[in-house]
Image (cartoon, rainbow, N blue to C red; front, side, top):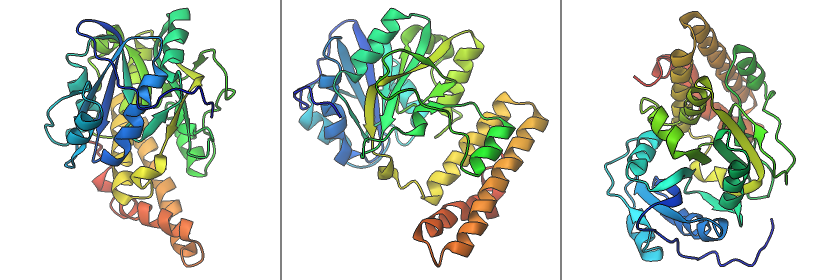
Length: 316
């Protein structure tokens, strides 16, 4: 990770009128992460004007944490856990930026990360959505950076651990075409955001960025990835093997299939997805006494395998 000698506690500057980019942060009991996430914004946006807007979907003291550390951040009153997409729509409503940047609270931006995204799109204005490269705490690129729209073949291959979209070279500054990019570090023009109506709020959690990118591409927009713009994403912070998270992921996927595919193809995808989960559950159950990783996998897949109707209809 590069060190530019930038003060990471730099206070965000909130402008009274228009600015280049509005940075939206949706928290969910994320108080312990917010100092690092918001504190890294100043060093990532040195060449552009910006504002930071925050809302807490959880019940902890995140509002007090943000106001205490960063008094210039605009903190909107919480209206409960309304979901990731709806919360970003809420934050974006009065945002001043010509661009909107979505940033997860469990992240840490590398220096100039947001500048690099904005400069990439200034050079090639054909892109309506840009994402950066998410990296692990160990500095390894994460497959979640560049997403592919699901197909029956991809669902089956991913069920056996194959088929993630290839990532561009680690330091590449050019824009690489993508189906979709992660909603945890996503830049979108205000014009496209308004044209699309923001996120579809029927997606409570997961697959909402796939839907947003899909709708943009259906209208002729382009989505890209800039690998030189990097963000450390603490993916372990949300307990990836948590059964509740798995259930939300399956509901999000089911909602996407039903919205974008014909009924027969959607049902085929749903069945393939269930079969993939069932295989991991049964194999994990057999191997659980010998391997803690497989035990966690079996635990996370148990509910969605044995109770498919809990997610099969999607978010309804």
